[in-house]
Length: 254
Image 1 (cartoon, one colour):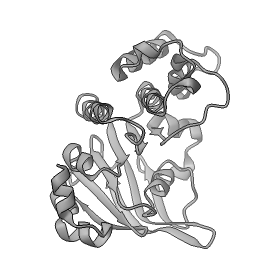
Image 2 (cartoon, one colour; image 1 turned 30 degrees about the vertical axis):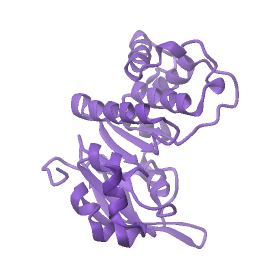
Image 3 (cartoon, helix red, strand yellow; image 1 turned 180 degrees about the vertical axis):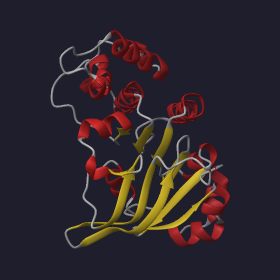
Image 4 (cartoon, one colour; image 1 turned 45 degrees about the vertical axis):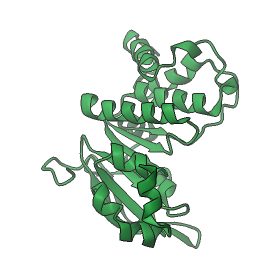
């Protein structure tokens, strides 16, 4: 799928990222093309969250280049990036009381006219995102009082309302029960297949990654060791080498 003829939406070209003297990503290259659905997997400490932050232009790179729409991401201001990339963190801290619908409405800020503020299409996008994620029963609630899983769904709705062509998700299922994990994955598939949203999601659950994503990027110790479909990226040898577990355990979980 990723070998298509369309120009890359986002490119990593031999990127190295370091925090002071500690290298967390080393010489990584790959492209994301419009309409792809990709899972980023690997053990704890492999560099997955750092890769997402570099993709979004949130951390400086030591070497290489990150390009968005064919231009260095360093040349975009934050609002321009936000119109192109939405991000769903593992968890966001809300410093003050905000109703669920107010949090979701933050997703429309990159699209606001600085003089007019929210427009009818912004309000419609917020309402549609709330309905699509299934948050109607939480309207009017203070988002700080929700469970971690409910807050995670609110953040997902915020990203849906943002309507950026690329969505980055850092462990979107981490606080969700099994039913909501599957629902969240099905929503990502729908956003990808029906809306054309390009998806890159960090996942710890290899079964979810293999089932819902046709392309997997496998990181290990800051290096990209596989860029392939689930069967190749999560072969028995790779599971043993990278995760240090018997692949039979993964097969039993399927």
